[in-house]
Length: 172
Image 1: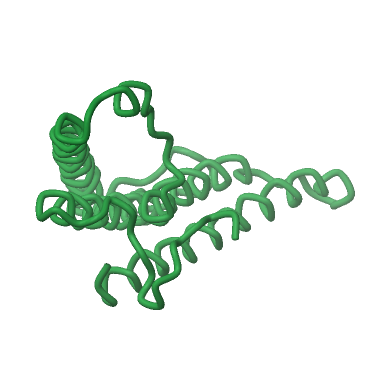
Image 2: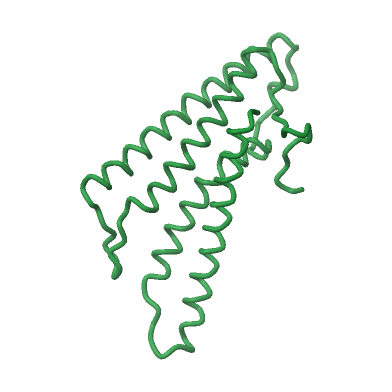
């Protein structure tokens, strides 16, 4: 994996982690609201936006770390040549679906910006903010999948490695 894409994937994962911490803060804020002199409103709305952003921002890192679920029931029972064909088909399909996702989420964020769309809650948040985070995550995911597809089609390993040669794992 080239250095620029690796930094982009890690940056998206860090932003996703910050958004996930934001979800926790919003939940604690709402739970602690019983001790405040006012009722905390819109915390659940913001927690939802942060949860969506964190999920999309973590997609690429999870993919690069080989933590996405892979069903290898068929791949384990076929020969090496058939396995190679099936892996190429699967990664090409995954790249096409990731491109479709990135395109439409980015288009949605762009249209929200053009129309100045706002949330319908008590705090009129510009919808382009959570949607831009989702678009960044989806685009980063597409780039990671496309890079892996390029490697698979050129005969390289399907397992991505860090610049240091250490395999990425989310649990380490």
